[in-house]
Length: 354
Image (tube, rainbow, N blue to C red; front, side, top):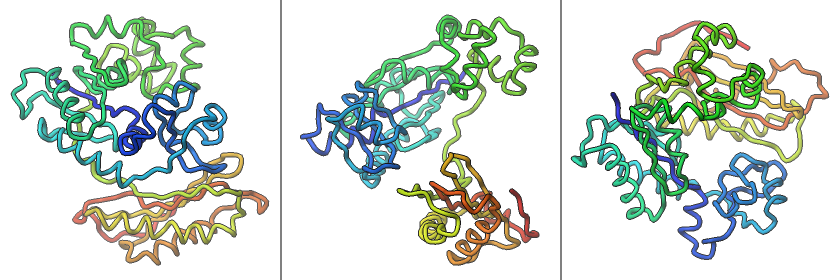
């Protein structure tokens, strides 16, 4: 039986802004660049009252909350706060799995501290975060990652919720299926069509019936409805991919993408220099003005040698896009994926894949 804590900082970016600028406290703060294509990075709880949410177009946020104060993101400060919080986690366990700058899983089955229980550890972590950073965090404590993540959202903001092993079934039974990771609007609609609205409804179905209806994901639904999640906390996940994207103020033709590709490649190349792993595959991502996403990739027969080579390959991948010349693009991304440990990389033939 594991003891898992999920820590989720409360409106992290917006809270950092309010902490550092007292004039913003108690006011609706939206962390976002202004512009037609900008999206919300974070919203304070005062802004959320109006329906403003992260990943929402900034223009919509402005319509929902005309009095919102827009603040451009400052990731240097957010990373600094995140590092302080990570040090607090590591004081309690080596098994820390960061999901982003503002949330992480901790396995405290065998903790460093002698606080006696996972609940006591979670409570102490929240106190330390407040004392060290003047920020608040919500925590969920449970026997696995799936339940801990649900629990951390239960008493937000600045809350703590515990799901004990003996209470799992009773807790899950009335829970809407929409709380399951991976159940978005489309999947929720499919489940609704079958009368599956709660975890209790799911538990009434056999694993065979769920697999017949939803393929391999059906087994996952069967397990989660019973509170089963065998995924371990994985500290320091190895880099799998690095990328950078640019969304344009005005949609561009394919031939006009050379400049943004040349601008993005140095950012990606510089990021790869900060890891000991080696990326094998160059990826070009495009999004058309009707939101169709295309990717083109190429794995050279040797390790990438330079930023210039990355640019050359990305531009060559652009030539493999065969949509009509009238097509316009709202986004371009350049990335490197297929990362391997240095001693795993061996010469191989060039591979093209769509």
